[in-house]
Image (cartoon, rainbow, N blue to C red):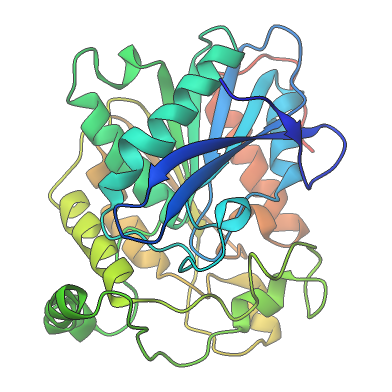
Length: 334
């Protein structure tokens, strides 16, 4: 295992760079970055968190929540994302979500289990990270021993990206066009209307309360390419046919959503990125036992919502952990 070194989050946080070798998509040497929070002694379990698109790990309140309940907390910045992006690389680009499986994800899981004495691992994913983890778990569960044999105890999804929002045409002929363009010009940027509503609602420089690196998570988001979106749509198709992740899951989402190119007070109380109805529709495709809960007033990242819906999200998570016997009884809500 590589050495741990101080992380940008400061005291109590360290990072370990995972050298992944040559990029299968031809953008040089790639790395993943595993971040850990100072862990409690003798943790009852571990959490491995994976971020979404135009995102990286900075949610220290979430890490605090888990460590207060006896978990060792780890987060993974995927290749070309946040801490892992290198000069000349297209932010977040991957042509096939399966590229993550044996590189970042399996290596991060091995590192987590090495650090925590093979404690059971709870996976947690936001948005695109939720899609990535769900597909990986389905493939992992198909192998010898299944997901549980690999040490996975459950899955928590926070507004998972499990279908494409917007007009129905983009999920039919539009997706076929994306597939064609992905073969011809995979790195070509798709022309989309501006979308700064969500970013403006959460960052302190605009209308929000959260501080994070705008180079790693710009308010208007990173450009979307045909190759990346094709990988996402192939992942969606796989999930819609039905998965079997082999462990119980909790799916949290906002109760309401709409597209928001610019900020307004309403944007603070809904999912301005994905369609919450689609999340409700497809959550059952995860397999095993699925608990799917809408949260009134929640943002796209429910753990970056305003005080009341955020507290509800943590309460729901706390209850689910207790119901699944995944947490010690001394945990308290943040």
